[in-house]
Length: 427
Image (cartoon, rainbow, N blue to C red; front, side, top):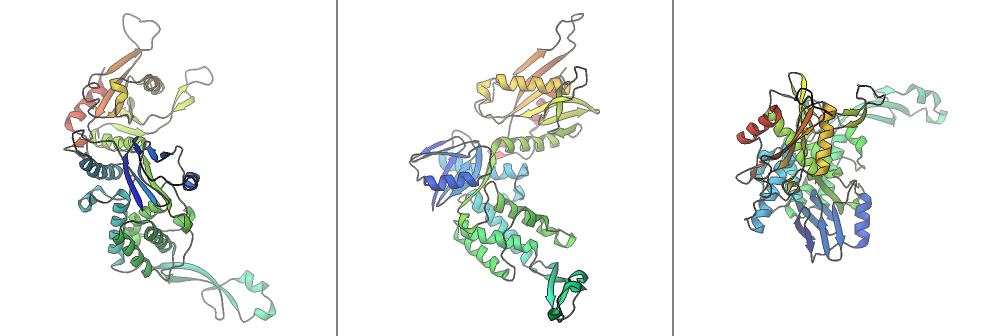
């Protein structure tokens, strides 16, 4: 199997690209609004999606473009893999804690690493016993067991009087939870490159030989009941969902060579920022992605139409105080707030009726200095009364320092907290 590693928006040449048929099959199966990879003759270009995409016998690993510029390519790839996993973990997009990085091997891609962690967790829960639960069964039996199905009994013909239509519960390992795990293991045994992951997947699958093979859908997951006794399976089931569905999903065994676990870095950064903000300003109230309205449908003062959804609304003493919106733009429009972002932020400020709107960018070598004092104030009054501005929206840019000695921060730095407080509370 061919494997290529590239960074978001990178154009990689001289690669063994999949056939047109394989690319069409992959595009048809993928459930994304935009294409994660663009192919041309012997070349591929990444977009804002990061993660793993396997198309036939070719696997593409796309990493985030967040690194120190003076590092070598090998160092960049190793750090980017670790930082991607921690970003996804902090953002809550993978059901595995970032502390698992202590078991990470820099030679593995994200997919193989997630598989290895999943198999380790599975070994822990299987060390006691394989999960069993009472499963409802309806069967035609020669002796009565459980409850008789009276309706069917009343309709059975004379030649079937020796058969009883029964409903009963049986304590069995053939249950929805194990069906999901077995299906996941079968897929991993087919799709993993690392021989150790393939072997361990097959070994665990052999423990579930009595579990029937069944196509897993969303309805199968809905049938799983996590009780107090099976709480340790919760993360395993969440990880199974990630492996089976990801962003490109097909339960046909022939199509397991077409799968993807991809994340839009715009969403990753948005979730990461929200997590850091919650920890940085606990004294403020926070609402995420709440719809607010910009205009009035009847011409009155009540805003009830043209809804918008800012990333974060900050509340102080029960009243809206500021709007925060994350923008994953590494160059931050070359040190400027772009016109489109400016119009959007003014709309947020007007709809929320707040004075302060803050755009949060990831700090990089390109915007480290230029965004520190970047702010624009838009006066909304047609005239100024008594030389006093009665209504305005101040749009500020803030570069978030995501790294501490090359590693993704789990909490906001003290300097960033101080600057954020100043931007939220400025008069």
